[in-house]
Amino acid sequence: MKTNNLTRRKFIGNATAGTVGAMVLTHLPVFGHSKEVLVSELAVKGGEPVRTEGWLRWPVWNSDAEKPMLSVLRSGNWYRGNGTKGSEFEKKYADLIGIKRVVATASGTTALETALHVMEVDAGDEVIVSPYTFIATYNVVFNQKALPVFADTDQETFNINPHKIEEKITERTKAILPVHILGLPADMNRINAIAKKNDLVVIEDACQAWLAEYEGKKCGTLGDLGCFSFQNSKNIPSGEGGAVVGNDDAIMDHCYSYHNCGRAHGKTMSEFSGYPFRGGNKRLTEFQAVILMSQMERAKSDADKRLENALYLDSKLKEMPGIIPYKLTEGATRSAYHLYPFRYKKEFFDDLPREKFLAALSAEGIPCDGGYGPQYHDGLMEEALSSKGYKRLFSEQRLNRYREELHNLPDNDQLTREAVWFFQNMLLADRKDMDDIIDAIQKVYENRKQLL
Ligand SMILES: *Cc1c(COP(=O)(O)O)cnc(C)c1O
Image (cartoon, rainbow, N blue to C red; front, side, top):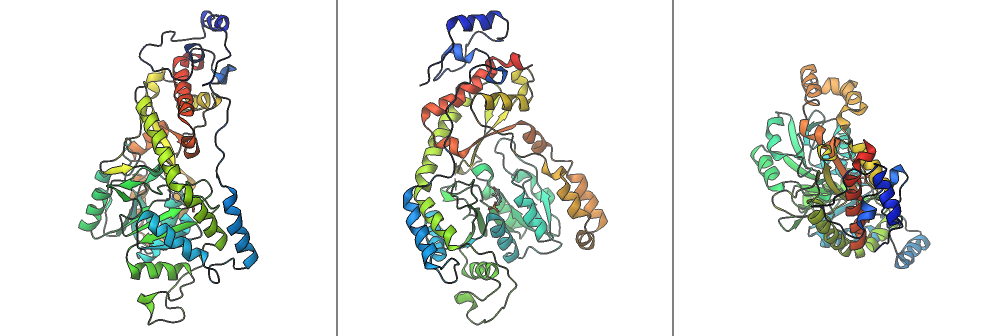
């Protein structure tokens, strides 16, 4: 536990100088720090921060990872065509998440592009997607020359609201692309039922959801295909990297073929030779594969640690005024906690804007972020819609209606104004470090008047 440096005299001095709003800590919990720390000058105003210690630097590796890297280097077999590491990784990842087949890719983006192509999302199609996601999810749909049609977000779960999906289906709709955002599972039973009823395919963007679970099954294994990312910031990192996963051999052979220049692959293509299909080079290198195999060794214990700390944060933060932790959707059994999110209700902080809350919390030594903005008002949308290709593929009427619908995502708009994220590496720290987070939020709350 940390001791505080504030003397009682300074504490009283601060208080009588009128800088402190609420002096009485009544219903709020107090953890690692004394009341003097919690009712004192905010660090953003020059006071002592709650925490000066840093957080775990990501990614994390140990010397065991060096030997296989060196051996790939010395072998000269750096590409999967003359190495074995790519296939070895694919088998291990398949076992880890409980699926028949995995195709490793250069990135999560290329995994999604492969999945969309193989599931026949084609030029002029529409794909229903959550607006609350990393921009890659929008981009991959545009890259297929299809339209990413947004169904509004459920603010409590941060995920696509399944009740908003059916109203977005048109005769052009080909797929639903649910994102298990921040590691929180999407409502897959409802999504799969809507897809079945309307003859749509389901591609899961599980790029933040390694080892997350829905009804005890791993995210990414619940739709027609699932996609993962292993980019440097992700919970299983290899600099860049990704995977498409699925249970259908013909579909997975096609994914392999597509990611390998369209060359025939596997038993289901044994009658073909040469280039029976279109494709590209979306392959993972052998270096990435060996890093991934060493990172996978810690993936489960890391996931358990994040879960334990997140449940502790849940139990405390839900008692705080104006702080509403995420809710797991019905059926979700476990989040991957790529991010730990809550909603900040400024009404409870005398209307202190979220940006000021974030700055104050950061200054107390607690890294945090406001998360995704309303990206559908950014330039990429209009750049696509006014392009030659989109004008050929969609009627002016459809594109205009689409533009209007971008202004009708009220729940997502509100979430982009209220969300606060903590990062996955913070959840790998100890219980006392979680207390720093809780105390820092409380300190900002108690002293909010200093910021008004
Ligand atoms: C990271 C991410 C991607 C893209 O993965 P890359 O490996 O960066 O290409 C796609 N979707 C989501 C939700 C992501 O977080």
